[in-house]
Length: 589
Image (tube, rainbow, N blue to C red):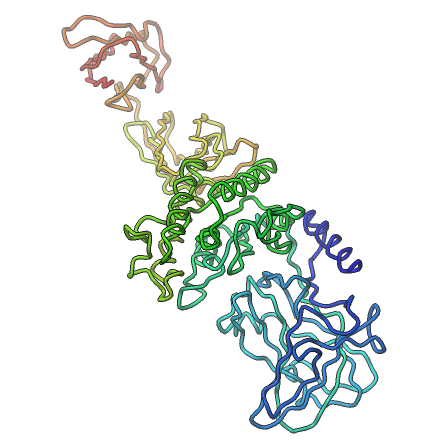
């Protein structure tokens, strides 16, 4: 076991630092010199295949590429028969191969083998769903006896022909029957891998831990599974994210506990390739945990389930990783004790994790805690397409507003009597410190105008307003510089408006109106003038003098703060030697 452990450790360290273009190793050496354990061989008569213990790949220590042994593949393809040989990595983990380049293996033939007689290749995911079978003869010529040669199949062919397999969860590389010429052939196989340029550090990874529901069991196609719907929606909005699905059918909370955790007697050990420790090797920005009902199936007490969840959440929070936990899901249990455990864990999830608890129960469950027939896949355990859509929508609504950056829904500018009114809306905000407003007049350099604080993090729609004053004729262009609390920023699109001013006296309507507690009042002068601007209540009594003095020609802005005044209608009046005007405004508290 030593060699594989060292390789696994090195891979984990490199993954966690994003230090290299990661290759997924499926076979490099076997500690067992008789057979390779993470393999599965079969033959349907009259075809035959050489296997150890009927289903395992034989290991050969005489002929190898590196370092001490190889896999021996000996097959005889017959008409009406079939054979297959599966190679997995230790622990049978699933791997996301969507960003990888090719499947690669080194082969050594004991006799010349024509290209047409080479096996076919296909991939299988964690749910035993398979891609289309690809002929190796399309990518390699004849094999010459006595020479190690590399065979490479581009990953693009599997992306084009995925069959029913989920390419984000590939666990097995299969070789299988091609022609049926009845000739027995032997090759040795070494250094089996899926290679590519996927560097973990280039992505913001979201890892899913779970069991069969997250693994995609229940819906009619993998595209309808909630994790895949979630992935598709997220990547449509931001391709810098990657969703890594580590879920395996049948898992309980014990399976996803940290490596080294010692469970109570009769409980499973952590699954080292699919648990929280392995999830951390992806340096995720978020982890989604979906454990629907297997703990209740095994009658694990609620105290054990809560203790496991609390351990997981503590690890993630200590690493500053956002965490969302789904509630349990309905299941057609015949034992009321199992149903009681489901409901108790559902309620505990709500109470302990609050806004980070995602409702996977309501609508899907009837009053007995069984799956509503509309959403039952037919086995009383898993949800169908419609049920998975609900799970997806609820996880989407809980997670995406908190991980996606500020989403600007609209940004407009309009001219209003020598002022430019800016308005913009966001659909959600994440760590939004605020917006710097910048202006360019007639294509001049961009100038700082003002700063408006943002809403921080919210999934509510927020609308912002700002008034700018146009002193000269021309085209006024504006852009927003959205700044996060960490200092990162992004510019909006540019909006423009044409402004034409004339030298005349004017008093603009206050903005906003109605207002609470402050509003702006602007006025324009064609020449330098002595000016008085005062506010009156509805009884005609003077409330405050906003300005008394001399103003230059141009547009001027005054701020009226009515914090200490009651709600009601007020009037404001400007007086100069040649001009007087009054307008009404409304204070609503």
